Each structure stands twice: as C-alpha cells, then as structure tokens.
Length: 174
Ligand SMILES: [Zn+2]
Ligand SMILES: [Zn+2]
Image (cartoon, rainbow, N blue to C red; front, side, top):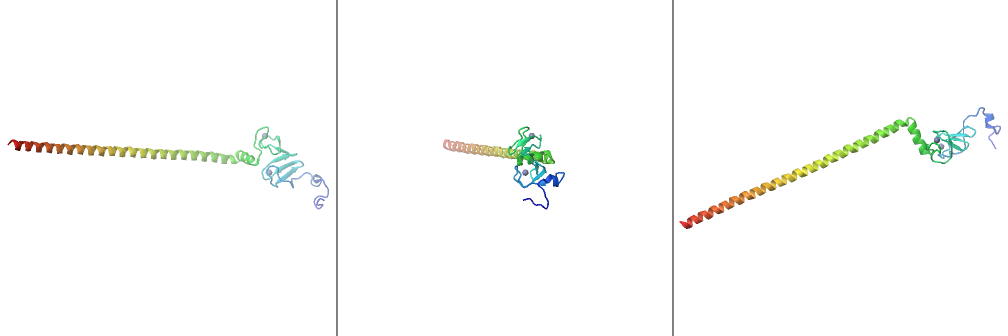
C-alpha cells in the first residue's frame, strides 16, 4: 500500500508534473550505494558514483552510448565504466587534470631526485675509488721508500763490511 499522504494515485508523474527527480529505493547497480536519483521514469543517476542509467542500461559518460550494466569498459569507446575507472576518468577530465599534472610533476621530481641520488652515489663511489687508488699509491710509495731505505742500509752495511775487510787485510799485510 502506498503512503497516500504524498501519493494518492499510483502515477507519480501526475502528482508531480512535470517529473521531479526523486530518490530511488534501489541501490546503484554500479557502486551498490543507495544513492540512485530518478531523473525521469526509466532514467537514473547515482549521486555517489555518477553512473547514468537509462532503462537498465549504463550510459557511457564519454560517448553516451548504452552499455550493459556490469561491463568494465564501454563497448563503443572503451571508456572505463567501473566505479574506480569512472573516478579516474573524471579526475582526468575535470579539475583533476591539475592533479594529474601534479602527479606527473611529482613523478618527474621523484625521477630527478633518484637521478640526483644516483649521481651522489656515483660521486661517493668515485670518491671511494679515488681514495682507494690514493691509499694504494700511498702504500706503494711507502713500500718504495722502505725498499729504498733497505737498499740504502744494505749498501751502507756492505760498504762498512768491505771497509772492515779492507782494514783487516791492510793490518794483516802490515
Ligand atoms: Zn553508483
Ligand atoms: Zn563510450
């Protein structure tokens, strides 16, 4: 039984001429929210996901062609018809394009930052390499110096030894 205070007849369009949008008792077939607004008999719009439905068909927001309810993409133009797809395409189309640009800029910045970081890492590696080469050079220089001093002292020792031999020989002869 209908609530007769508002609707004394079964014809809502007679009571409210012309048809005024009214909330539907049904849930949105796209997002399942109870947000369906009846624009006119047979035409519904979801206030939550903005799905546009005419006679049980999902109207593509891009090309306005009727699609079967539940398909992911418009069979004509490929526009996403799911809730997330609709949100993304709205974001891209509306002021969201700003957000998209922002995301692109952010992506660019992240990339640039990563490049900077990798450059820093490269510089670090180069620095480490440079220091390694330097310390190897230092080590080999020190080794060279040690070798030099060993040779020097060996030569001095040999000289002293030869000198002693000469002196002893001289004393023996005398
Ligand atoms: Zn919806
Ligand atoms: Zn389409």
